[in-house]
Amino acid sequence: MGLEKRWQAPNLSIVKAAQPIPKNLKQQLAQSLDSFEESELVFVHRVFLEVEKARVWKRIGETAEADRVAGKWEDLDEVIRGVRARLRAS
Image 1 (cartoon, one colour):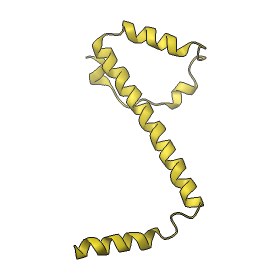
Image 2 (cartoon, helix red, strand yellow):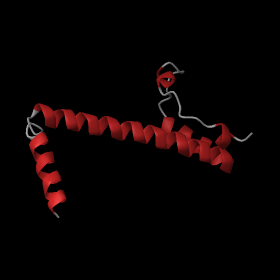
Image 3 (cartoon, helix red, strand yellow):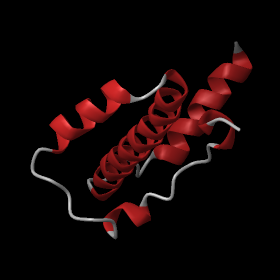
Image 4 (spheres, helix red, strand yellow):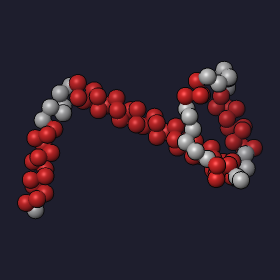
């Protein structure tokens, strides 16, 4: 069974407990990617997408929390009611 068929979302918490990260990590990753077969690259691409998704969700959450603390969501219920009323009327 190829890697792409067995792939599941990675448990990113295990990365923290892994071996020390080398100083030339980008160079080592690039060299490794050059030696991978196409099926292995599909797997790596999916892992990269999962990492990117986690990074984006974290940033969205931080921005939303900052907006909430700043009071930007205080009238959210009122805004939603207004939009729903306009949509029903149209």
